[in-house]
Length: 155
Image (cartoon, rainbow, N blue to C red):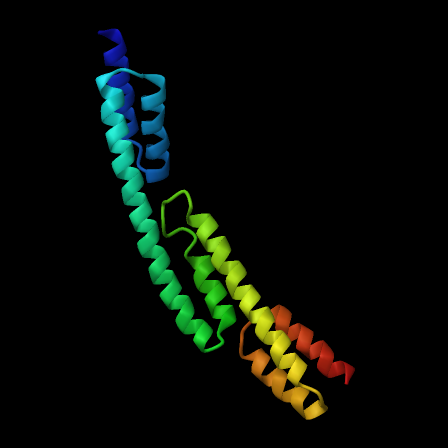
């Protein structure tokens, strides 16, 4: 059967794709372009297993990343937390990983901004402002350090 032969050849090509995300798309193409073939049914099963595997990899990587970030945030090491997220960019071959990293980046920045506002609000005199600046410098976030430095120069 020519349709089965063509579908099987497409399935074999899809299986040779190295990057998991691209292999997932190639398997999906087999399913959609060769309906009602044994190769399409096989591709659908392989696609679903690969998708589940990628989802589990993503969940495991996210748990690991969250634990690393939590430890850094507990020590107010916001800059290092942002670097950890940034370096995680190429570590997981899953479609949603960039979105997960973007969400974590936003969360770290928002937490640093909230703490900055708290610390800055409590610094009501020159001595308090110097103490706040010393604390904020340790966070490793250049934008916040520059902001408090401008405030220091303005006093």
